[in-house]
Image (cartoon, rainbow, N blue to C red; front, top):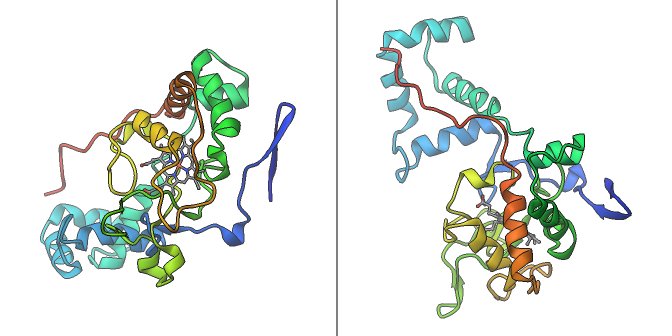
Length: 254
Ligand code: HEC
């Protein structure tokens, strides 16, 4: 286990590799980026296109042929190649050089407000956020139950989370700790998008999440002051990278 020394205080910041899930989706139902990228295409709630239809459609567009030839050595369109290309694109999406990184790793506070600096203290110590949002990407790669989506009247979760994958009752309502880099760029929050703003997320934690029979022991009321809440929100904004937002192409192969 890695230990980081932040000034005089020492905190645990990482999960042993053997315990870190590299699976994708909030419930970790898919292993590997190549498998992940195909799921939204096939999902009827998203694009609702089966693999065969996708391949046929792409093969009808002559403009793609040179790209397939260049990348794979022939113009043949097959699903594995489409998945490999999409997965490689996703691998180019990076995040870094945030105001927080500049301050933490380069001692440059020019983009890090005093409030965000105090928020760092709340994140790592008073709020204990880093017990789960740990390491370089602020995720321990584990699954936890915060009570998001809990229906107290019905006594169940709208979405079973990790339990739907493992079949283990103890995994009910558990979801994978999301990385927090660029988190300010993709509201709404949580697996069900139930919290509209970062402030709403911090307030949710401050009241101890939603109590339910499987809630994580690490989730309990935090007694943060309203100044702490402001500072923690400022800290989360300081995790925004200096990368420009993605812009969809306007011209496509035809
Ligand atoms: C017990 C582990 C744990 C702790 C402690 C924890 N988190 Fe989380 N965090 C999670 C999990 C798991 C989710 C996803 C929950 C879900 O959707 O059901 C999450 C979601 C979030 C999100 C939403 C991200 C998104 O993309 O939707 C933010 C922001 C966040 N946490 C910030 C914090 C802050 C700030 C703290 C400290 C006050 C904190 N977390 C403490 C595990 C934790």
